[in-house]
Length: 255
View 1 (cartoon, rainbow, N blue to C red):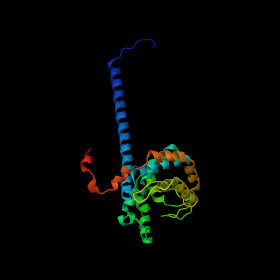
View 2: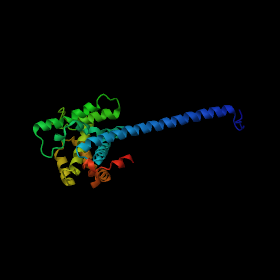
View 3: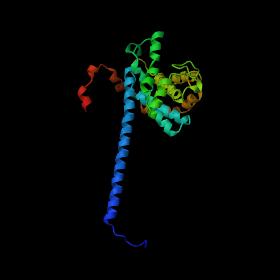
View 4: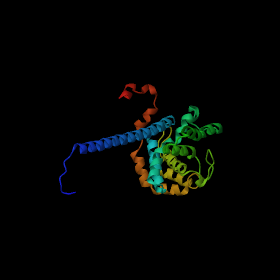
């Protein structure tokens, strides 16, 4: 065949080209649908997590900060980028079990009694039960984080009393991120602690509450931690959601 010869574009060529174009169009549409479904799934995770935070007087920014801290630590700990990203989406569900804790306990302003403390600690188990039996990787990781983020490196945590590296790394990472944010952020019932005090408390818990290597990695990344904290800093209007529902403009929710 002469490579320089001009070949006429026949009806057969048109049919083949049209067929490939049609297949490409379907593939693009399917890819977009898959992406849209994934985005919807991940947004649902954040919104459901926010529902738990709403009961505990935590802002939506708390979830964003904790998940970003978790991804940062996962990378610093040497986890591959796929697992680090998965933890970013899974970690917001760590406190989902608080949906099953009675208001009288969850919202109590004072110190909990031993009996109330036992009820409060059940949120780890409740969260794991809510998330059990899923085959989706993000939900599986969420279940592990929900169950183990209150375990402590020295074995004094709950609900399983796991110790050291017997605690899944997801739980060890979330523990550091969650405590740091709880101490360093304002709540409706308390002001944020100064960074110096927060870091002193965290360092004092090294090897007791926290995995020492993971905590060291977190502390060495404080410039990045501060950047995350600044990006998702709470504003006064973020606390308006905790006001009486009678003050909500219902019509605005249709927009």
